[in-house]
Length: 194
Image (tube, rainbow, N blue to C red):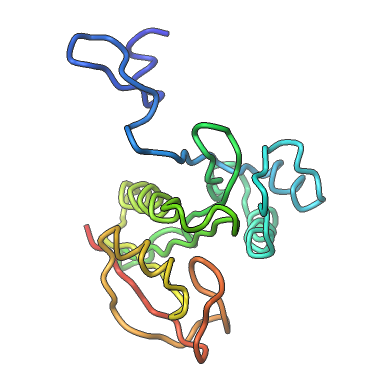
């Protein structure tokens, strides 16, 4: 692979011109588009197109995938799978909820399979999603709605420079980025600005 082609694939180069690595040091996840066909297959119970880690997909994953399968018109309108770089196993998913509004706000949502939690992967997933969202045209700030009892998700967004903005009543009842852990139906609104 030529240097120009490799650069477009995320390959980095050492000072002496040798290929250094396929991913930055410490990055254990890569984001991969779910795609419409895979979304529909997963909903039908066919996981042959992915190497699913234990616990994935979980109920929240399937809820999100159902929305993708129903509304996405192309693969680039689907969410990302969180894939372990070392093994290729899918441990979670994430994306934005419809792109930026007229104020430049874009909301992210994400989730990890239970056996993959508590290892810092959520923090890494939020970092990669946030970087991708902030790189999209028209985005000035990113929002993550987190249930108060979901301490791991709160830490993931806080470690990525999000600041607590306010507590809100959830728009759709219960939920929030990162899954269960609610308290009284409230959600915490975290914001990360450019």
